[in-house]
Amino acid sequence: MLKELMKYTDLADKKMIGTFKKAGVPLPEAERLFSHILNSQYIWACRIRGEKTNVDRFDLLDVSEFDDIQQRNMGYFYQLLENADLSAAVSYSNSQGEAFTDAIEDILFHVVNHSTYHRAQVATQFRVHGIKPPVTDYIHLKRQGEL
Image 1: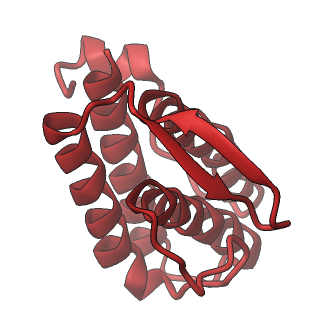
Image 2 (image 1 turned 180 degrees about the horizontal axis):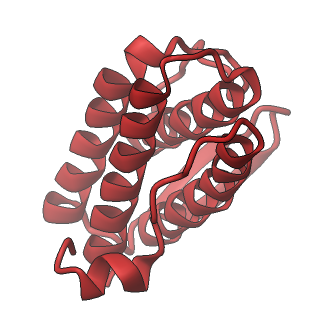
């Protein structure tokens, strides 16, 4: 199921990026929120790899960067899902320097859940600006054969 959920996250993120591109206007709050999604995904990928990163979860990305960053993030997560022992524990420090140890599978589920939460906020911002957000409900995408 975790592979399916990561595929869902990948597809939903791509749909949001497509909406940003079609909008053709600045959407500062939506861009901030989506930047946070992508930055957080990258930070979690670095934590799993045991790498330090200078990326802050609140760094603002340019919409033109969204595609490449999203593809990099998902490529890494797909690699993990195919090759890693998902029950393996990973030790890392959060942004406040607090130490934690979690299973890779729990971290990946958190990535999916966190991304879904913030995509809903991005969708709200699209609506505020009169832009129809893409349908990113898991069950809808499943019914449509996209998953």
